[in-house]
Image (tube, rainbow, N blue to C red):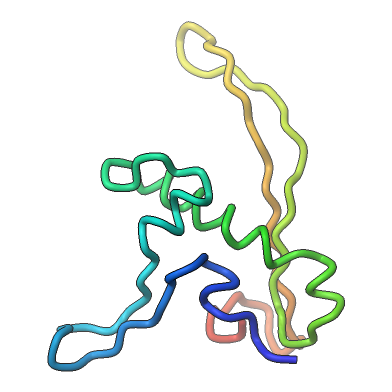
Length: 118
């Protein structure tokens, strides 16, 4: 099977921008609507971490163990872990800590993570 598409991993409207007349650089475009559907209520004012969490949540809906098992082209699995609690700061404020596991799978050709392998 084929590699997962940009839309499957990043959400509806995700696309690759090519260099050309109207754009000065190429890159990945993920529309605010895709981030909102992942739970980011205000993407125009959200933090960088908030954006990353929305992107991870989008990817989690497609990069499942089931899809991985059915598609030899998929190299990543995103799964929820368990929640725990920790305290931080001088006043020991309680924080919830949620785990997300991203498993990267590739043919064994070296000991480093290379984004180009996935």
